[in-house]
Image (cartoon, rainbow, N blue to C red; front, side, top):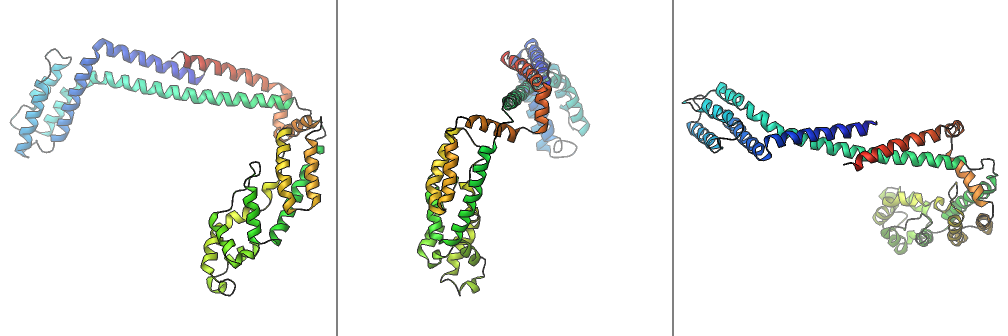
Length: 367
């Protein structure tokens, strides 16, 4: 039996025991005793300092009146009513001391014990709720662990000797070339043109380029500095305002528009045009290539575009899925994973995890 199932079992037994105790005594009676005990205790706590010794006589009278009203309002056949009567006898004196208040609390002890029956029931229910939450968390963890190991088994079925370089070579060649081309493009064109390109790229869902901030676009389109390259704008943004006065008409506007957007501009480095490794399924990679061909043709020469088309052509190859599966397996499988697959321990782990999952699910369903 797993720890989570055992905790559930114990929590349910505690709830059943606590509810049986409540039923034996009667819920209504217990709630009345609990309420009366809380009121009596609250009165003792509130008036102890002011109603003792030669303190405030008005407070002393109020305390005795309120305490007597609380006790005398209880039914004679209420369980532990004698405890309240005894406490009342203790405080029904001409003068009260701290020891009298202590004696009154002690006299209320039997009523407190009875009130604890309801408290224990609440605690038992709270523990059961937490045990159920913990069981559900454990159940999700088991599902995740099973899925991870099932994925490991799938990877183990891949042909690890497949010539994955047929995919890796063209993709890596393209990735390197497109970043180099974008770096050159970024260095050559104006900030206006670069941000226009970024705005266009942002409309392509498979290219992770964020649209340029509106205030930055507005600045480069309305100021002469927008004809400078982005690297030059970033360099100018680092100048002091007094030095900037020699280069731009409105140093404050440049600082506000460019310096605050440095992170965005730094991230416009061409990496969003690269392809993932290992690649996705053929249809997904094909769509990624087709979106990029349109964009890359704007910032790179035909050799880079041709390499991208070569990658796209590979997605129609009958061997693509075998090569891709092998690439994924080689990327995800480490030495430990291969050893676990070879030893058969992964299958054993799945069986053990499934057994615990089924036991836990049954225990939760029984609720």
